[in-house]
Image 1: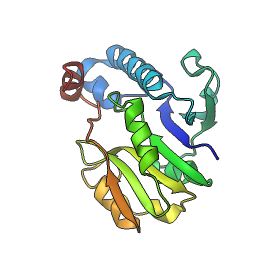
Image 2: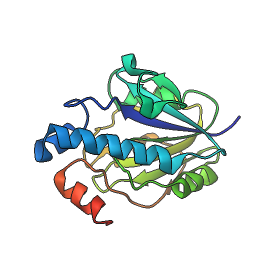
Image 3: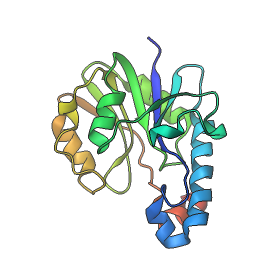
Image 4: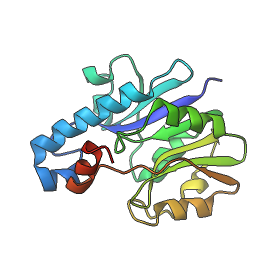
Length: 190
């Protein structure tokens, strides 16, 4: 089975994506920034070595955006990140999941993540806010791997590690571009 890279994305609807960033820079600029970040990520991570799949929310936007044309797509399940990750890791084989908050991700990052995946270990790209920008594992994983995680907090990655029985391999730390300070750092190349 070919390795799968799954990218979680929100439809770039004004006022629905990058809401924390919009509070700092306005809805229009946040909308443009999110579209640009998503396009950059899609360009940066494609490779014939793996399938690139877009997990879309809300589901009604499946197949409707030119930015995502040519990519295999599926609808994210509702709820927190727990059922969404369980859905992504439900099938057999190597899977890497990223979001659309860290536009610094590169093809080399994804290559390294796939290279590190072995049965019984987990690969993470830690984020500067206590979360992660990448998770990789050999599927299938069950929903128990994603229970009792305080999502979107400084405890996210440590909570998730508590659920995992195996070696943890960490990639480089990246920032989530969720506010004006992070946006400035990303644009400055930090």
